[in-house]
Length: 251
Length: 135
Image (cartoon, rainbow over all chains, first blue to last red):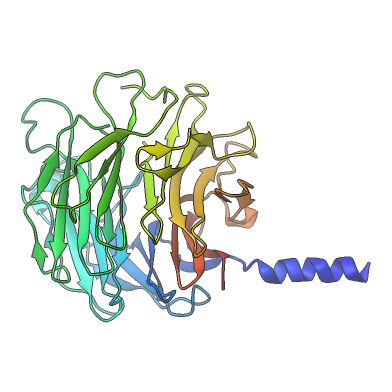
């Protein structure tokens, strides 16, 4: 009996309970530095906030505002902020936001993608800069972010700049260097992509990004596609279908 | 709809991919995942080990040992009981991450660093974090 109780106690101590990072916050995203410093971003009070854990997730800092959304950041269905960190613990935060007051007369204000950078481990952030270089062409606000150890940053999103009045979405992406100071020219991978699925993105230790996305268009079995770069994101050479079974996800 | 997820191991040799699909039926959202190298992925498998509920919004990360982990939303105990679950690609054993007392949960996001694998997620009262492995 005592042994069983001891075993239960050991099990309980081996599995740390959940920690509340921020009450009333939604749509989190998480990144970890090589030393186990965690950075979490989320929407709260209509802004993008960031909290930091310097003890491998045991305790968390009081959140700070990473991007002031003027009380109007809303998120919804994976439209929240993203966070990434490089080997120097420079923290990169992106989010879809709208700073054009005229847009708020619409039911769904068109948002653009913004980046803010912290060089003091999440205590303060730079003024946000726009990532998509053609405004109001990323209306779905679905995006992803990743950072390589050397500070090369990649952002991917659904983009409509080449669609005009035609339906559909292409995949926009950009490489950002110099600790967020230099935003490269936006590039596109032609779609159509699923109109309501954010792309996925990761980057390896050498700085080569990999994208994953769901096909769009009229298709009874929208496939999952992976695009691989072997030249630091200058281009994506290989695009391959990942799923072998039918997805049964249609248009 | 749910974003597909991708992760790469620290040595750059292994990739993991996960996504929601409806191969089991229109109202039966499942998470499928596969681990391998680009062009050499194993056939995908359902991440969950039960036949009930819906699964979605997968997130991926590799731990310090190079093992892929997936976290996802799961309503296996009832449509109003959305919880966060996780599994590793080695054992495939499903682990409940969020606690029942946290209420409806969603949008898990895994990250690994310093030998620790953690997950942040939206819970009933805000954003929560839990260490899954390492110390």
